[in-house]
Amino acid sequence: MFVAPEGESAGSQSFHLSAKNVTVRFGEVTALDHFTANVPRGTVGLLGPNGAGKSTFIKASLGLLELDDGSIRVGSLDSRHQSLAIRDEVGYMPEHDCLLQSMNAVELVAYLAQISGMGRRDSMQRSHEVLDFVGIDEERYRLIKSYSTGMKQKVKLAQAIVHDPSLLFLDEPTSGMDPQGREEMLDLVRRIGSSEKTVIVSSHILQEVERVCDYVVIISSGKLIRAGETLALVAGEEGVHSLTIRGDSKAIADYVGALGELCEVLRKTGEGDRQTTLLLRGCGDGRAIFRLAAEGGVQVRSYRPETLDLEEVFLRAFKRGESNGN
Amino acid sequence: MGISPIQYRPWKGERSAQNLRMYVILRSVFRHGLKSTGVKILLILGFFLIFAFQLIFVVLMPHERLEAEDMNSSLNGFGLAIFAMLLAAVVTSDLISEDLSSNSFVLYFSRAVKVRDYVVGKTGGALIIMSILCMVPPVLIAVVATLTQSGGDYLHSAGIIGRTAVAGALATVFYIPYGIMMSAFTRKKSYAAVGTFMSFFVLVIVAEVFSEFAREWRIISPVESLVYSFDWIYGESLPSYISEGALVSFLVLFILVPAALTYLRIMRQAVGK
Image (cartoon, rainbow over all chains, first blue to last red):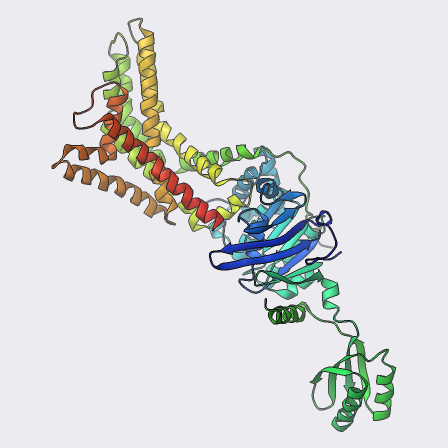
């Protein structure tokens, strides 16, 4: 499973959310520019710099924005003609403060549950259930205006899941939270994601996305620039290895020179006088590396396929996007 | 061993129809409004100052049937128009402004709610509160007067009850769209309340000043135009300087233009495009 960019063969039926050639303009500004992505079921990270088009994509998916071109499908529903039906199936946790200050958490969540179509009794019971789930205890009877940022974030999550949507948009879910609050929120996201929901997490904090998301979509300037399974993205390029060596500086310099004849040295990072890490491409099975090291009196401390973190993936994708004119 | 975390549980119930969701908003506005001290004070004060004496009067005074002139004077035109104006300013002040200040439009419109349903729900809740002062007591007085009449012409009295219901409905509806419009253009409840009241007050002053030169200007005073409307509904003659067409045009403009502006404002806020 993967998040397929334009041209991939998988049909929209196998994806929970499918955007095809979507263009949204605000006057002269093009927020989404022929954006195409297929989002599978699971927990999906939506990444991009400020103004990349993430929020526009979410709003367009909810049918809140008129598309200038293209189409978005949620399951089998078309956002242009069935936006109300989509909104019954979608939960949205906005980034900014949006809670009604004059209500307490139980009243607010039950009220929004009723607007989502629940009966009064059901909504009250469900409100307590989801507030238990997100960890709002007796404070649920206090007015929301007295809540901390972390508690408000949890109530925002509770109102987004109260009507049991199959697709959940979380916009910066850990925004403004302390480290413990972040951990709790990420745990909640993980637990919701494991209950067969599709959770789309829009966040700037890449480490968090890497920890909870199975898939990642990277947007820049309204275009999809990279998408795929998180594990595949951070696995690095095939045939690229990281080598850490130790020895005296002259031996290391000679060894690196000899390696340069054998394979491509992409990057050299010194760690003090006696240790260096190299990023190599095209070194085959690595036997020559160990032979050269033995001959040159250099100690090989590690030799393994390259692994990236999501930040590196994001930066590389972003650079590639820029070089493509995006 | 810690306590096991509460797991996410699916909901298996059935959703109500999407076009019924506006009633949830309406009910919330109504309940929230009735909790407000200002609203409670105005409702109680308004009832006792305008209607309580009239109610006792119709029970005690012998009468053969309900008459239009008696009912028109029972409405105490200026008193009702002024109390309705105050109540509308208080009831509508936080209807939209609270959603604006807390950015909570997104909570409504990320659900299956249309802008139309939102506006109708908010307006409907406010109208029900207004009707507690503007419609229910006059109709109650008319019904009590009919039940205690000595004559047998109940058909005539029923006609007056109908006219009273129309007059009450007009008083209920008249100020609400303007108040909601003011609430839709500010984030502060106090600005909305004061702005609504002051706008009406300014129109009354302008009408008063310009009527010195031409008496037709009286029609732009919301209080006076409402009183003229009561006269018209009860079949009494309007002053010579007020034409029926001008009166109806003012009423329609005073209700429809603010309603349209509110809709457009919320549409812009909700969709942002």
